[in-house]
Length: 519
Image (cartoon, rainbow, N blue to C red; front, side, top):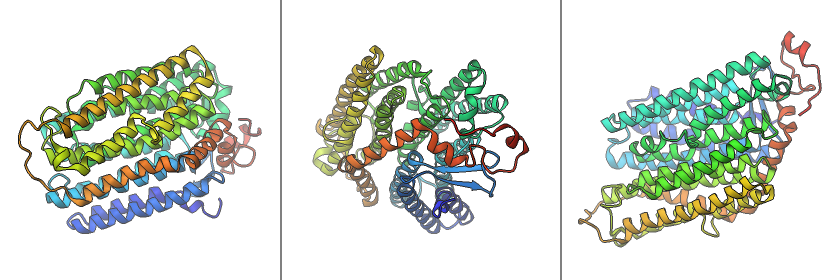
């Protein structure tokens, strides 16, 4: 363990400790707010330190002192540290937004006794998923964040939220069952669920079984990431939740699924056997999602369909099976987390100011809320990929990587990406024009927007723009992360020291894994 490896568990331990304290102090709303704010602020600091440290090599912690593959390993490499840092920043900004909303509404929309412990558990679940060194704890991370999300998505218990929450829960449980079945298959075929050891053992098993395991994992993670045709649940589920809940779900939960696809496809299944399948899924996700967005007249549903559509860009980069494609995909994931979350927070402000999210009933907001018009326009153009924003840079990286692969399917995806970008621009300009520039169908009552809500949304918008400013160093970081992912050796040797066997106490491991690390 390196000197700073003690940082690795903090993004999990701090939110969980905060959740326990917040639950114990459920009668004290102010104390809950302070605890949540402090826990997530410290988690952000720890994640940023991990981001710096992981650039020099993965940091690994063996929980309880039992080394892999016997014990549980938490691993912070370049990819997981970057995902931790950006998710910590987003959860903190959304928390400030929700605190301001709760104070302004007298906590009617966000019942604090339930909200704060659930929100902290959600943050811990996301961190577990990013740090997990084995399939089972990746599953545990998913279940922890999903258990919290079940509570958050049905907050206040209106009929509409219960209905959409039920759909969300049923789909989430289905994907969890598939994931659990895949874990059982992996263990029965290889005798391990440790991902580093699986990387060594999977080439030795029946190729048909390995392919079945790969497809099962893709199916489970594809549902969580909302890849077409497994995305039908998302546009009906997210828009009904409170604005901050919808924002954090849209920004982060689908990205945990994308992260799981990146981790398992590069580490466990190198060689690109499922690349064509992923390319077709990426193309369908981009095009069908954006066509759904164009057809919407409700801004939350429009944004939900753009969320689905732009997951396709990330899968495009993964399916290319090249370091350039993976680097662009990781860059695009980071960009999309900030931009999509910002747009959903602004949609909440729009609903608060205009009284609705229906584009047919909104109008005239540019005159009475000009800053809100700017706050929507900037991330919208960033999402559409207008130069020089980070969305443009990420898409250019993906298109260049696709051109470098040069297959007919890759060129088809390039064309699909360009068409999707143009249709995204059309859908967002239509929404901006209707909400801010058309004549209001009815007088808009004066309503104050809390500074905390506007400020946190503006902070996330600035963070999204700042990715453009630091695009060079950030892109270099994602290129190094992609190099590690494709090389695999760095990750495997960090988790399985001593010639790939590890130092855990296990007679079975000692007699069967005497070989060297051969990624």
